[in-house]
Amino acid sequence: MAATTASFLSRRLVHCRMVPNNNNRTSVFTVGNFAVTNTNSLLVPHDTPSSSTCRSHYTYTGPGRFDPTTSGSNNNHSHRFQTWKERGFTVGIGGPVGSGKTALVLALIKRLADTSSGNKNLPPLGVVTNDIFTQEDAQFLHKNQTVLDKKFIKAVETGGCPHAAIREDVSANLTACEDLTKLLLLNSNDTAKIPLILCESGGDNLAANFSRELADLTLYVIDVAGGDKVPRKGGPGITQSDLLVINKIDLAEAVGADLDVMRRDADTMRKAHGTTTTTTSEHEHGAATSGPTVFASVRNGIALDEIQQFILDQYEKAVN
Ligand SMILES: Nc1nc2c(ncn2[C@@H]2O[C@H](COP(=O)(O)OP(=O)(O)OP(=O)(O)O)[C@@H](O)[C@H]2O)c(=O)[nH]1
Ligand SMILES: [Mg+2]
Image (cartoon, rainbow, N blue to C red; front, side, top):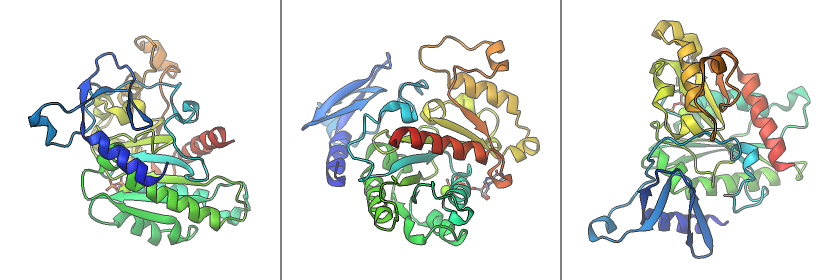
């Protein structure tokens, strides 16, 4: 879908009011020819004078549940309006301020854009960063690596709540991803290879999560320095992201964070749709019914292999 259409659609969305949906049903409403699906709320048009003047955001009545059938490459990309050649496979990387999103993106660039190893199978890589009032993260990435040309790293300045740009009105990010895809295909020797785009959201609170209209795969990065209670506080990124990354485990001892507690709570919060309460024994045996969580120290290169492999596996499954 053209960015203008996305923008139009999003603008129409903000003139609707979300109604709590306690059953967690999927609701669909139509704008023109487009069906808009929202799994957390029902949408109704504004109908009172008091509400018609204010913009409205998605209202979450709960953090939602991890659903393996709609996750990553399994979701059949039902919210996509574009082909892979109009917009490459898009990986949304979200999480609170300072959790290590840019550090992770930098590490992934160094691995995925490095052709010196002779690996010709890697997809063409592009990066979109989001900051509120600056282009800080894109500039940081320009400066701190040499394997990816600066023109493939684009900055979006959201000018407002970062979650709005990845959730309610994703048009600026869609446009940046589309432009990058065009550029990557133009510069690629193998135009059959679908571009891979890493889209880092601006640091935000626990209510932020990527719209499936924008991200084909979502990673949510939190860190141990925020305290070991963060996973159980939930939020859609923690519960529904395709991969939860708990970063900075090198600091766990210094801040008194218990990683076992974080594992237990992450597994509980990411318990898959339709499964029953997690038991202690399930935790001890890796809680196979929960969405995946990795413990990382991006600074020390811990779990980067796992994260990279996860992204590449999901990319391959989705585009091939
Ligand atoms: N000790 C430690 N520090 C880390 C690790 N990963 C990132 N950092 C540091 O944490 C700080 C914030 O990292 P960023 O990557 O900028 O975090 P961010 O999530 O992109 O931040 P915003 O974009 O501002 O939301 C930086 O000083 C990083 O060097 C880690 O694994 N361990
Ligand atoms: Mg950042």
